[in-house]
Length: 325
Image 1 (cartoon, rainbow, N blue to C red):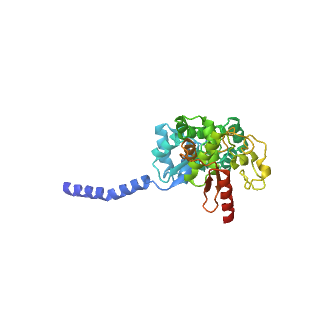
Image 2 (image 1 turned 135 degrees about the vertical axis):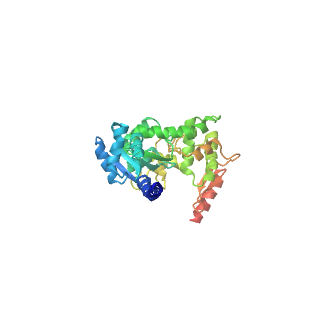
Image 3 (image 1 turned 30 degrees about the vertical axis):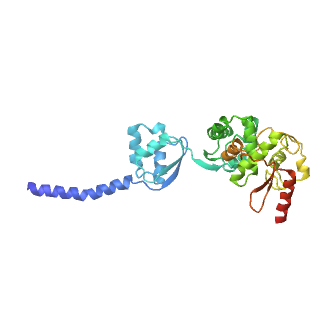
């Protein structure tokens, strides 16, 4: 009799194993990601139901029991959470306590953008509500050129000062170590200013040190920089073209009275005209060695530039470029 009982018990255990494994798998195998919005001030019961409706938990009762015994109910956050289908209740509770409840969005700030363009991109992606508040704060702080261009993960509805602080922190991490090693005569702001002009001029990455050398050569001999991007910066937004950097500058444009007009005023402009890349800053700090060019003209055929040591050669290069059109 005892032997029969043992056999029956063993058979029950064997039969129960697949069922228990299936139950474990049902309640503990996580699925695809889903977003759950927990409104402020809702009850633990309401949160449990929201999670159940989204498929994050299987049982509202078990979730509430876990909350009861853990005492975690008062610590649950509101906000937007990225969770997974069929998560264990304990893991969901941990996430709702420790995650920020905010969702970050990818925003790409390009090299060569001025403050206004950065503000427009942030507003378009709803990172900030008012681009003008950002522009005013950035300009008042003198941060043109110091807002590091990169891809950022940011939540919506940020305070402009918070975004600026993040971008300045990236500048400190990526650019400041480079300028700190520099032992030449230029100030950090002057380095950044020339780098911002290089950024707006360069199309081919390998030409950056050459373009930087041209401008540094001009600074050295006291020759006007005569850089088109500085005039474009001075002119500001062009409503006819719908852009901040006007194409096809005219003689009238080159006469605009602005300290940023390097056709009219000698020396380095008062400050950067855009946010330069790391490579443009490196180009200013390490210009093409023994490069005596003072001029360059865009070669539309190659996408690069033709460099010249003197004005006579420069005129010849211009004529050669025009023949190609």
